[in-house]
Length: 129
Image (cartoon, rainbow, N blue to C red):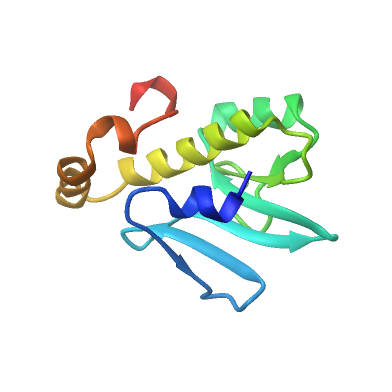
């Protein structure tokens, strides 16, 4: 999977390097939903996750661990080493994006929903956000 391409394809996603060239940040309306970096020679991505699901994913997949340099309750680090099924990685990205959109100010969120549609913004989100 083209990780950067998939992240960039999210509605109104913006790419930035606020922490230097080694950390690629993806934001929606200024809020981070993914952070791509190299760790121990492997590409990794930090993604927001429902706290209860985050623990289960860590138990289920060796490639998923508590968020590196992030709030470990709400963020996971996923090693993009090919061991996690591509569909699951896409679902985790979709969920991270949806959780961040859900947390935006109401007017901003409603503007995104009007421009892109509810289903596009909340694809793959747990509990049908």
